[in-house]
Image (cartoon, rainbow, N blue to C red; front, side, top):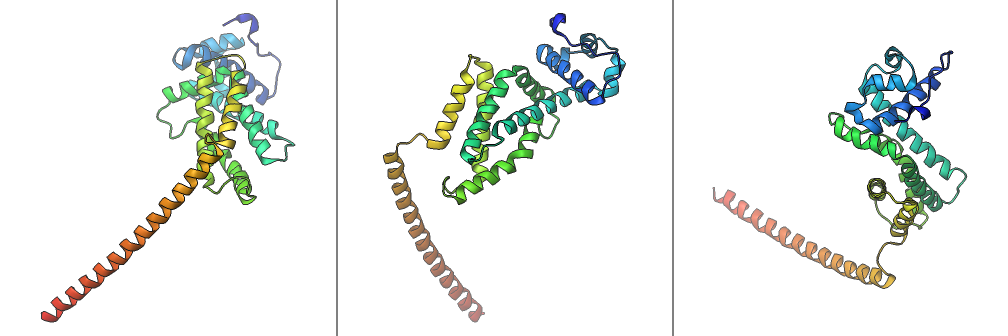
Length: 251
């Protein structure tokens, strides 16, 4: 780590929030470079030019410091996504902007991807990773948006949970794929690919029509079969009831 680019905490009094942010900024770089196990508190204190006691006043343990850094990373992601859709009226344009902002954010901050990777490895005792906590906190807003699009007839009928789960999984996977196969500008192309598949699918119009008709026929056949099974079951129940009645009368 280059000492020439490190930030020094000022000796004069500063706001608690400002100092906390400076600690988290330096800690994020340190954890990303050295890993959780090797990023000892003394390294961070040296990086910031303060005593270890100053760090412990803000974060009582290295675990709390790491999780606070991961939480800060996710807050910054959502701030970036919110900024990207501010003033955008069309819901589909909001989705497109948010997808682009998500992938751009992690492409610009690979150190934050490292935090997510390390958290999964180091803190398996946690019920839910920080990434998932933040995703669940915001997902209902997106589900509301999709409900509106379905009501307007712009998105086909399906459970909104299915939509958000699929898109969330696609973005999560793309984020790691971009991180491990880093190519300049690849996040923009990845965003376009994801949006193309989400909005237009992979099937041609004729194939979609053919499969829709085929599925419709299959569903009708299944409903007929279910009705026949229902009639058969009713007959079996009637016969069974008659036998039970005869047996009871015989007794």
